[in-house]
Each structure stands twice: as structure tokens, then as C-alpha cells.
Amino acid sequence: MVTQIERMLVEAWEKFCDYYDTRAPRYQDSWRPPLDRAGALESHWICWTEKDLTFHVGRFFYGILKENEESLFSNIEIHFEKSLDPRHFRDYLFVNRLEELRTRLIEEGILNQGYPEFDLIVAYENRPYRFLLCAEVKCFRGTRYVRDPIQVIDNDIVKLIAIRDLEIAKKVVFVLFDDYYWCNNVNTANAIQQRLDEIRNENGITVLFHTSEAKLENY
View (cartoon, helix red, strand yellow):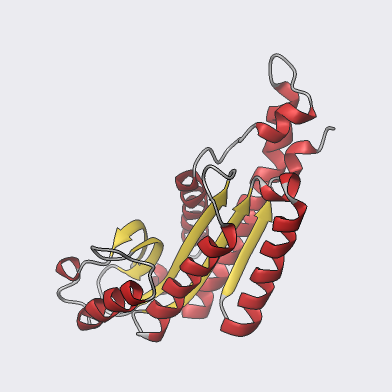
């Protein structure tokens, strides 16, 4: 069951990547006035913000769920940017671990106050069990949005490992769409790729990665 949910998210990601790679060249080609290559590089189509990326992954996931109309998946929903405040999960089996999660992330320097928020959660709607899957989603759009991309990645991985180790979520996934570094800073782009490979090998976390290179298809 959990493995199937993870596969569905991977499939949703693949559908988003295909959606982006198909549509982005159309937008840059039909822009008025016409864009040169530099203009296309600076443009951010489809995913104006990180929330847009999370939304697209979610909508494709729901489409896949609908295709699998077995009763096995009929009570599953996806939730976005949810704070894990114990007051929201009083009936859940893991509620006593949420304070431990918070303390752990404060000690790691990931959290200053309040409770951690996760970008995407897949859960049963009628069973107070562990989350089926949790994901952190990142969209890199420039240095003014991300000062240290490797640190940003590492912070999310710490969160995912913590929620998995405390048995609050059964599966964890890290999602990254690079709309900046691959074409503006080769050294940083290579460092990002290397770090993602390390995460896959060392932590057993599913990593989904794509770039916006398709927007330059017509140049």
C-alpha cells in the first residue's frame, strides 16, 4: 500500500515534468514581444512560486488516484503546508511524538519556535494512523530566494529523516525543481546534483529532481 502511494507520487512528478517540458517552450516561443535567450532564462513559467510546484504535483497525484478507483485508495487525501501542531492531531496514534519532533528540530537548528510544517502529506482521512507519505518540495528560482541551496536541501532532509525515524510518516520524499542554478552557476548545480546522490545513497530517501532546461528548447 505505502509503496504504491510512493509510486503514485513518482508518477505524478513524471507527469509534471512532462507537462513543464511540453508547455514551457510554447510560452517562450509565443511571448510578445519575442524573448531572446537571456529573457527566457530570466522568465519563470508555470511555477511562479514554490506553492505552484506543490500544487501541480498534488493535482497530478489526485488524477492518478482517480484512475485507481479501488476501495484501497478511496479514503486517501493529500494535504499541503500543514503544521504538525498536536492540537490538530489529538486522536492520532503518533500525537505524543510531535513534541519530540519539535524538540529534535529545534536542537538541529531547523526550527526556532512553533511546530514544523510539511509541504505535502498523504494520509488516511478515516484512520488516525501514521501518515502514508510526507514530502518536502523546493523550487530554486534565484539567489534572492535561496542563499545557500545545499543548506536548504540539508534542512529539509533533517526534517524528513526525523518524521520518518519517529514513525510519524511511513515514507518520505524530497522534491526539487531547479529553475536557476543549472543555467546560472554550474559549480552550484553540480554540487546540488552531488548532494542529491549522497542523500539517495546514505539516507534511502526518494529524491525527485528536474530542471527548467526545456524553456530554452527553441534557442
